[in-house]
Length: 201
Image (cartoon, rainbow, N blue to C red; front, side, top):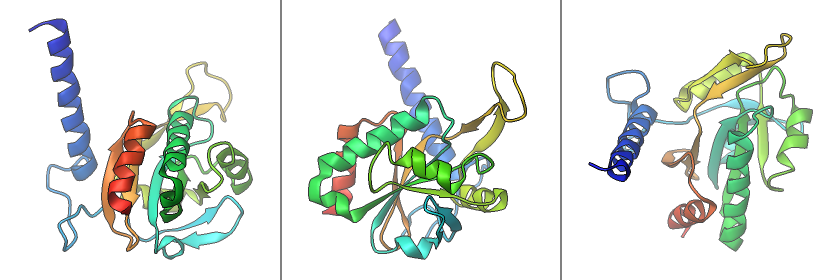
């Protein structure tokens, strides 16, 4: 097997493992499913949006919610993904009105509503930033089977100089609040727009 073939096999294996982690988490037991057979990912939450308003999952019912978890101090993955979301929504045209893009911080200590408000405006005018207490963020992360953990910054520094390790997945939640599908890290704006449109027609 050549280098190209070996690389293809490795990429395929990683894709399988990422998909299995999303649906089963650390447990070896299958994840619970809804009556329609979809994975039991997502669910009720109570958080604060980037304007300081208290919101719950009920505020997003009626539209597809595209959810991404990250943090504003993220140097690369988060802004790249959110830029992709913005470009995909622009490609959707009028269909984009059926999508509520949501950015949930995994770093509530630093990501206040004001910080999120300044951050989300750089990516799309309809992007909603959500934060909350550490317990509220832990609860929604658990519901979405998301991994995140604080990690020391590579250059050391003070107590506020840390980064956050986290899964990089876009979750599509239906108008009824039920998980529809996910988009893996690295999905292009074109592929994301195409994938979204399949569920918005």
